[in-house]
Length: 56
Image (tube, helix red, strand yellow):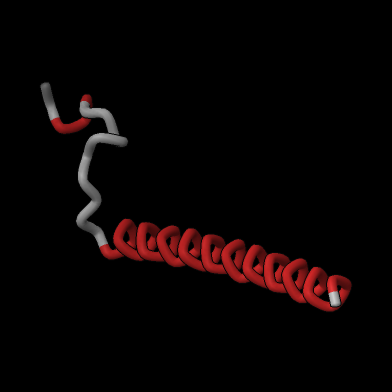
């Protein structure tokens, strides 16, 4: 099998463009997970505080 016949998905990307793309994708995923966590925690804290205020 020659180099041109290989599946491009299976070929490791050692170029700087490929590394930068993977790094950017990782950063976007991390930011997305962090944002969801912050929103979920804020919603949870709001519900707890509302319950404490209404309960007293």
